[in-house]
Image (cartoon, rainbow, N blue to C red; front, side):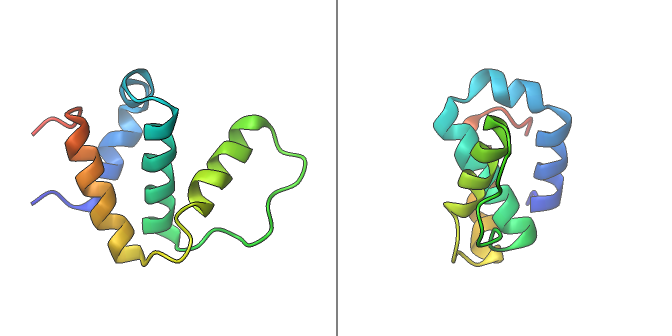
Length: 88
């Protein structure tokens, strides 16, 4: 079975592939689940004076608030595998 860490490393190395093939919703899900799975809940306060990409990332992460890291990792694994972009 592929681990969260293996998948995350592959997604990082192949970022452009995922950016080119996922819509904004998919990118929001993959980023939010990754951060929740790696770091737990996002900071409560929304970052101030950040550009659009940083705001998007925070909102994606915050949308997973309250989900356990284990559940987020499991969902991340399933989501990445479901994209069909991960080489099995």
